[in-house]
Image (cartoon, rainbow, N blue to C red; front, side):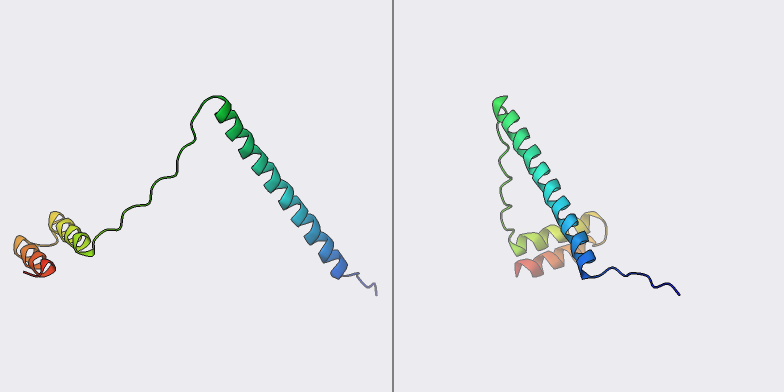
Length: 92
């Protein structure tokens, strides 16, 4: 009966090493490409795009009123239900 040689710790480590090395090479290539694109845009006089500003926090009462208005517009709340819910939200 023939005995198969199994993949030992050394074999697994070699595969992991090569996979990690290839991933690092791909990441380095992607980083280089981004740097080249940014350099080309700068040379062409294209301004960099600023990140979008963070949205201002919405007041919970305003958010609740908007939700109620949406439900009313969709016909889910009647005029009377909307008025009652709005008064309750506003504390009147």
